[in-house]
Image (cartoon, rainbow, N blue to C red; front, side, top):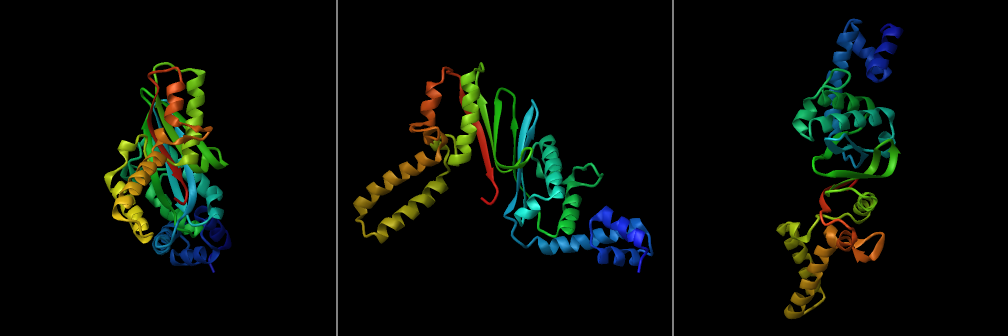
Length: 283
């Protein structure tokens, strides 16, 4: 058996189990640095096996400054791990780096973290330590020039770490209490209503065609004639566009009004929803 103090030190450094540390130290003839390297190599192997599993849990992190704001999703397999301090700290640090590289995944993976290792290497090490599949998911960076960013976190775990994050970019000439309130409310609206796009003209043609096929198949199964089916289909497609476009959605604060009605009521002709993103873990 390897020296107990060396095993303890190796465990504290790598987070690996007692048997793995003991075995690595024996293989490395007591050399701690070499033992760490051996565990990393073994960790890569273990991580590779875990990457075939599903990772539907995790956290969303929003961060930024006056110049830009970013949102990123880091996935894991269980909610238990999503609340683990190592995972929380990893997600926060990754989020800050992601903002600095403007959501460029290649740059992110090759960026150095505080410990001097790259993001990709730290990811492998964390998988080996925690024992679950961990992946870097969706991300987006907003340019804050000529716009103001509003954010919303739902099901917050800690700080800006949550299960659902929203970032909305508004463009306007002059701020007001009314616009500031709208910014906060539209972020909550996006979280609740999950729009695809800002305006219905922005919905991709392939999405519309897929929806049409589903509707036509449903109507066919109900025995509707071609003429009636076409009329019903047209109405359903228009409703689909309306429900999935931010401007034509029912306003969550007052469902009698549409989002575009609220925009028109605000005393600012320059106010415009420039962009938004909504990331929910598991979707």
